[in-house]
Image (cartoon, rainbow, N blue to C red; front, top):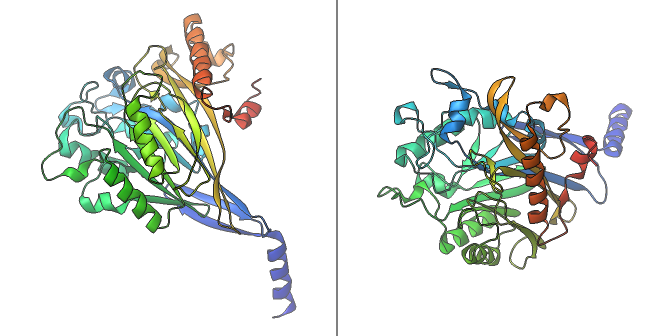
Length: 395
């Protein structure tokens, strides 16, 4: 080895090195120091139900078959995009204009609704829920194709048995994370004969099989998303608790819930069959965007879970969990009729938010206070996102 090459090798070893990891939709560039305790982090941000009622697409209508939902996420887009993986629950299908756009009880949103989610920074959408087959098999299949078109990953519904068997395992900063999703039911809408693969329904044998396959394929963390339980209840039902307890026994590391349309408590658990010493559960994430305007349903949540890995010992653990409440504004702004997700800590006296009425401000602060109470009800080991608070001078 000549002196020049030897010197370069010494510099490289002393300074660490840089590598590129490709995740669809994102390029992660990270400096990895060559130290004894080399810890890498994967940041996951999760939100609740992403709904599209008819009032929402009427507000977003621009002209003809054109809709603009991007303003909904203007205040939280940067925060969502900061994460390595950002996840939401897509509670609608995009079956196309010919099927007629509609809200409750049989949802069908414009394709532009998906474009806005890509714009907002989402990477993965959970699609197993009670509205997944509102427009039959063709609605499921077209929704998945449109998600693929926008570069959005999804799991919970599938276009074939082969697709269902493939599982979704993401590798971020050297940490392999499996994402699984299941729904309690489909509102009585029958799953087409011969197409049971279309949606994952909560079933102990299926969940056990999927977790086992995920481990066999190298998943170090298994995250399970459930769409279950009674609506609008702020405490988990006995059914929700049974499902979560059994899934922990089956080896899940993180369990996220949806469907009640309100936020429910969170807690940590000691894991015996999972890969993490301590796992985490949130029974329900509530709504992130919808036209449900009443107390507890007009507030969303951005949950951040930082998963760490010691590259020397290969041990994986939850480094910390924090949260950011988000209230959904609906009304007139200088841009016309809008829905806007407003995060905790905005300066409501700033002229930027002059569209907020006194009633809006009161409802927003009530929503934030409610969220803090619910989130910390079972554990004190979860805090508001301190980095976000510091960055925005919130005290």
